[in-house]
Image (cartoon, rainbow, N blue to C red; front, side, top):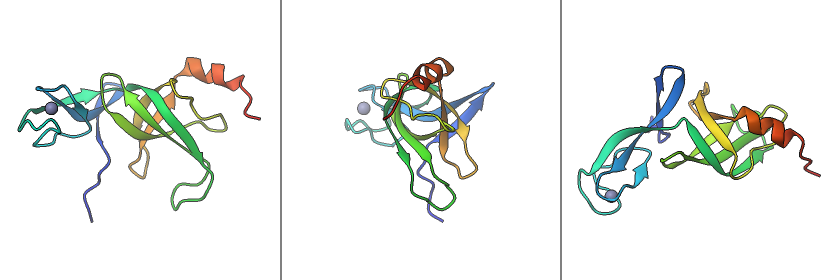
Length: 133
Ligand SMILES: [Zn+2]
C-alpha cells in the first residue's frame, strides 16, 4: 500500500485544521513538512496548522461515475487562509458548485479519506438565486 499523499487533518474542538508547514526563511506554506524548502533552506519548515476557512480558487462538478464516488461530485481547489492551496470535495447536495472567491471551511474527511469542505452558509443562500442556464 503506497503512502496516502492527501494532507492530514487534526480535530481541534469542533474544527478541523490542516497539518502543514511554513518555512521560517521564505514564509512558503505547504501541506506537509519537507526537509528542504523549495527556497533551498534545509530544516527551515516548521509544523503548523491551517484553516479551517479558505477561499475557492476554482471548482468543478464531476458527472461521470468514479468507483466509490457516485456522481455528481464537486471538487474545488481552495486557498486556506494564510495557508496552502488544497484540493477538497465540496458538499453541495443539489446546489450549485462554489464560485471562485466564495468562502468554504474544511469539515473533515469522508469515508474514503478525501478532504471535505462545506460552503459558508451566507453564500449558499446568495448562490441559490443564481441561474446556470
Ligand atoms: Zn523557504
